[in-house]
Length: 280
Ligand SMILES: Cc1cc2nc3c(=O)[nH]c(=O)nc-3n(C[C@H](O)[C@H](O)[C@H](O)COP(=O)(O)OP(=O)(O)OC[C@H]3O[C@@H](n4cnc5c(N)ncnc54)[C@H](O)[C@@H]3O)c2cc1C
Image (cartoon, rainbow, N blue to C red; front, top):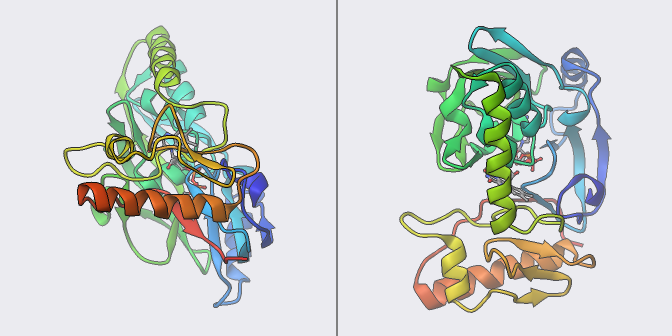
């Protein structure tokens, strides 16, 4: 899984399934044993897979769920495997405003729905008019946002379903302006976050009224390392892989940071990053 996650670590999955399209995915799920463990994977930009790997099937949406189209004057349908940046550019080029923030999220539409990903003041679910889901039997449903409890980087909805598409409602905008706004946002980001090194973005959620990065830095953990994993010098809520990190190094550093922040500040940080799989 090191090849499929942005931290570039993680042991093997038993099976990596790349659906050809939605129909293929439905047939695959329909044939699956009831107790087969499943892991949904977008671009692996918020996922730590342990070194022992994942004993089950990984559904890699980015290979087949790639449809992206305008649904009406102000709405777009994006399948779960489409990269968020592609959705942002598509909307900008279509003269639609409100999806620019997606350009800053290096994941898929499915991952953004699962995480309520947000950047530059925008949030995924603020734009969701509806979603399509699939269950373990391959049944596809349309669902309304009111069926989900959505919070900061958290989404709870009907159990046993995964996202296969989003319907986004946007606003009419100026055709040229969207691309310029995206460029401006990405330039700002490059100045404050480490780019070009393997990471998973922010490791912890910001606690109410504060910033995890500030707490981590004030606790003296900026630059701290475990094996090949280090707390970024540029942004203390990022853990970067200097090239030799194992998932074990990263998980140990995550725990050490959380313990230190709890000891120094009395604040219990909640993890944003999802951890799955077996220890070696
Ligand atoms: C450099 C960097 C910067 C980042 N900046 C931001 C940021 O500004 N804002 C932000 O919110 N995040 C940010 N992230 C984190 C990450 O990009 C987001 O959380 C993103 O939404 C994850 O999408 P993904 O497709 O990579 O999901 P993955 O990492 O593949 O999966 C994440 C979780 O979602 C589940 N999942 C994936 N697809 C589906 C599906 N179709 N249905 C149901 N569940 C699914 C997975 O099982 C997993 O639990 C950043 C990451 C990096 C590496």
